[in-house]
Length: 624
Image (tube, rainbow, N blue to C red; front, side, top):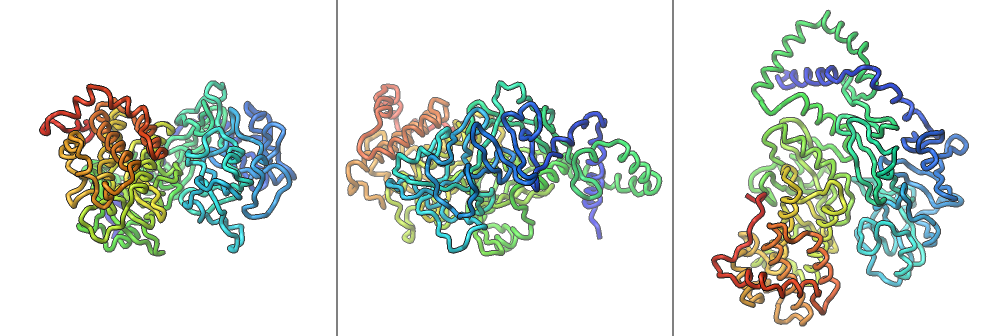
């Protein structure tokens, strides 16, 4: 027997189809940019084999009407795939079928220009490197399905999203300074561990170009590897290339129970014809169902047709796996029961789960009070899913339905949550030495700085704590649990992240109890009185550490103190903290000069020497 909500949903889908009718003149010329093909490839704007505003730059030649080639300067690159933000190409020269073949570091011969840049999505396999410090074990298990299972992974691999060794704008020859003799390249499909061999080039239009104007219903997106470059991206509910000189943005809708886009969402005649049939045959049924739908909407004030359409659009355009509620209910051992949660935040709960294939995941259940709150959640899930970073936990998928709490599913690395290793009094906990803790702190702050300074618009965590940091088999950081509902000012969000980083650094130094991180007032009082050793985690054996490690612990305590005292006031940015903390991680002997200079300031010494009752760190407004 059908529920009232199912009847209401049917009406809402019908209305979503009808209310998006526009004049036919609005879509003239929208089909032609999608029609150009080369063999099995659809050649998207701005790439073209014909004349056009950008055809000289994005010229694609179609060899034998089946194989596309991209001409950049004097070199021609065979195209393997098109992406919304880039194009996957092979190395110039004769084609080869060898898997992970190592090429000379100078063989690609292109680093970037104002239209193309080497994408940060590439993973590099390096051959015979003298310096193994750039090797990252986390990318060795990428599967290349076209290769034999007997093919061994590279001895050393490095994701370009990790900017510790390779920086935006560098060519592949940059790895020669590490003594590497060759390399291969591949791209991992987002949301999986499957890779495709080749080099992904990001493309963009110069910001001052007359061809860069975005169409209506499109947003401007900054390029990550091309300075002053941008692209256009259609808003939710629309599809297309987003450019005014390209295909623009086509309305997306539901027709006859199927996802559709383009003319069928706009053509008046077809809508009117269907409307006449419905009005003449089933008008009474429509009236009854409409009244029932209105009754349901009045009983559930948070629900609206626009939110339902938004969810349908998200489900259709999502690159991540869409789980059913039953799948995640079974994965969490019977359905999100009290006592099964791993962590609790202000607007959500984290659960551990095991999927049907045996893989372990974390399920973040977000408490939306109304369907209106679902809109920013969808936007942030979309933004986070688009970022591939070695220190961010991969989003495996999600569950999104109207009138249900959104569920985000993250990967669950081998070594679990950081807070489990920092908890004092646990005899079974694995020892985290100071070197590992320092690495965790540096990787965390670098990731936060990347999200704030290199992503536009910036992404803030807002809930940073040790229970939102995962550790893989090498104790490499994987951050998750981003606050998805807060919509505060960027300045407030940045202060919140800096303040929370200070709390995390203190917990890394001192460990935590069953009640959580160390008492903030007592910790600052001990630091002020020169008794840091009294709050250091006993497992670190502070007095047994070499002098260089003790100096590092003291320096990190100083940085944590300044994050707590000044971060909430906006007087200390994440970029400043990153610069100092990374310097500490690299320097095992001396404290950075910037830190010593800051701590010689009399006003800071005065704040540190306040009475115990007044020593407290002002929380940012977003924490209340």
